[in-house]
Image (cartoon, rainbow, N blue to C red; front, top):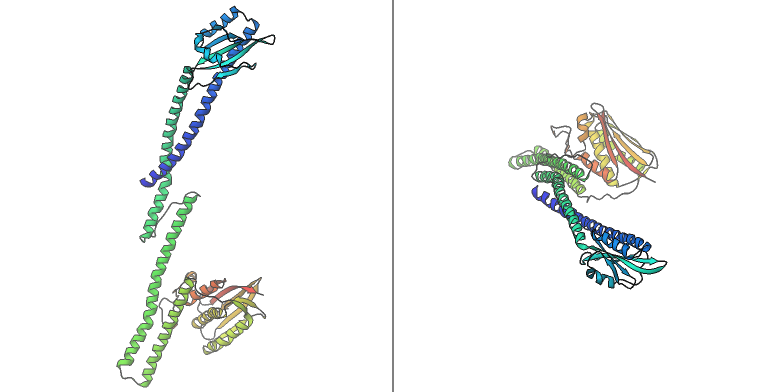
Length: 456
């Protein structure tokens, strides 16, 4: 957790610290420029004020009065005539001659800034023209020592430094809590995925909120449940397949040993060889079903759909199965409208209906009736196979289409099922883009409903 928190903290700190520094830099520059501009405007306004007095009374007494006022202030004034001769100064005028000499001849009425280089210069200064009756009589130069400005800026820098330190401290505190808040669920998810990799699928993650972290926690929990189901399904699959393979192999081996070691009559030998052949066929069918399911799982099972006349197809199914129903003294009734077409693989569709009708024969008593009906609704084709057999218990219905699931847990050989037939039917129906459902009541029979897209 510490590693992730530190990494997140460093990233957040660098981003926020960089933004804070950038913001402080621009804010500091703006405040300094604004403060210097205010000082220059104030200095120029003071010069214009003196200029207004001198324009009314441009004499030695007024000049002396103005210079005397400025001598008590933190600014200095120099008054010259139009030729640049100094008429009065609040301080040693020798310090200001260089600034006076470089002033322009034409100065606007509102005055102008003479020197604004406060960083490296000794003074900032402004100049205002003295005009009487429209004629230029002299100039008022205002000077302010830049040392006071440096003191002001230094105080401003101190305030910014204090604000920066407080901002960094608050940022660090916020980042510590934020990085831990983000890292904690991620670390929990990391631990959960580690447990899943170790085979422990009983992980629980909080799914508070409606954000990406909550979605990720939900996905991990769902993955754990799916893996748990797949693991249990694999265990059940291996147990079932081992049993289903062991049973016919046991019969084959046992009866083959009897035929090989004993002197049997021809009648007994034929009986045992028939049993061996039946179990070999049973084993062959099981392996074929497993191979089909494996191809379906790999999406390599090929469905070759074509335009199929369902009416003719159902009639041929009836012809094939009628003898099998008659042999068990059962009735197969078919109801199918004329000129009905679907897009389907004929051999696979026959396999679907064959499995369902075969189940009807196996699990229905003699004298019962099985009904195969075909109908349409909008653009869909409905195929229903309803028998009058012993039915399926309600608690078994949700699992009846799962692989190796059998209602008869005793697995007797009398019915001969492997538990793969209905799962193959489901996969084939889905491969056609169809749907399958089952309804059943014990003692009353079972109804399978297949839904396919119709074709013109």
